[in-house]
Image 1: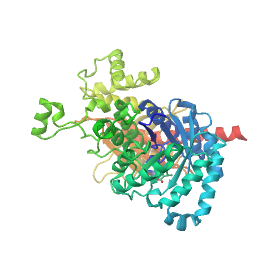
Image 2: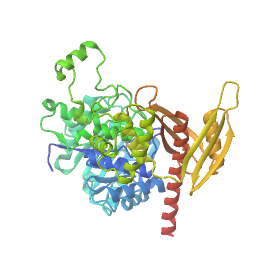
Image 3: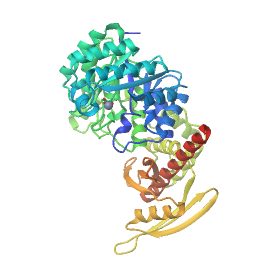
Image 4: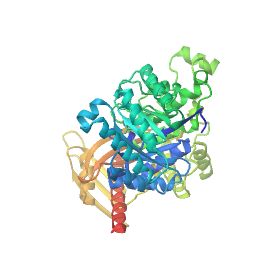
Length: 517
Ligand code: KIV
Ligand code: ZN
């Protein structure tokens, strides 16, 4: 094991998915996992297999698809959780089980209602049981940020002896200041010595997650648990892009420490996660925010033009941010130019089918819009890849509304090669669209969230709509994506996309159950 290498453990698909409004379906999780693999993440925490059949399905399918990163599943220190994790990661080329129990006085007294001896006993059993499935077991002392050092040492001794090779010290509630966290990590990593790798997992409740992660690295942590765009429970987790770029940019401070991240994949990964979850990073977010590399003031612009490093400590291209290339596509551009462009944008794994479908959509768009920007094309490809489930397809939409009028929508959709049409009125145009679709499909969706953003600039910009819709009480809300120059058309597509996603997940889970019977 190279002592200078920092293991990057990404938990976007587990802690990140715990962010409000960030639930993803299996196909979306697979897409993100494949992109995380391309990014060079060492360990992908693909989910919490025991949480639901959907979570188990996602972890096990990711385990089958990813080969370069280790696939990990989270489990409480409970036999059934560990068993589900073990079964779900079984087929991965490299796999890990991550198990945890809280060690802080407040958690042990009020949440677990367990004594220190009971916690140690449970922790040891969990690790031993996890080792019956995999060789690589990580143990987390939940709420380590508020735990007592002597007790943590006792727990560490016991779980290392039981077979844990990574000890994670989560600052679960984002309480620690950097110098305090650094001191804790120093003491515990000296204590662990060569017996285990010390990992950190910092929450951002005080806006200190990345600072804490970096201080931990300087004090001996060799694994960092991070998420793309800093997603995660409450205020989120330490952001992968921030920690990785700080280590890379400040070699003067971090010396020979390095990660295996291919930083040019940072921005594409951030875009994919934002598109899938519908949660955009704030504009001024470090590294991946829209403004991260734009200079507004004249003095700054002048400086950058004279010498880039006057106001830029990183090159945009180092994180995969490219200014729009000079090759602008329009309605006369052909398939070859289109393929060239998407390869230049980093989509090297697009299937011929996806390429053809995106090219058809590009032609329609280019008829309406003079110049089609790189962002438009990026979005067309992503949207095509996200909408592979086409049980219901929107064929036509007609809406009417005016002040004091009755908002009405007429919708036609294709289902099993049949065109179905209906119309309904609603409290507004959107409501009328959703009601008509519900009537046509027989499903009664409950809209949990709706977001619209413009992909590029200008009055003719593409509208990207993200919906979260629940179709029954027993399953989570499903995310849908719609893209069009017309916002209402994008809205109808996004609603149907959520329904398609729900139906395909339902079908897959019912097939699995019938196999098991
Ligand atoms: O924040 C936390 O403590 C966690 C653990 C389960 C690692 O997410
Ligand atoms: Zn966490």
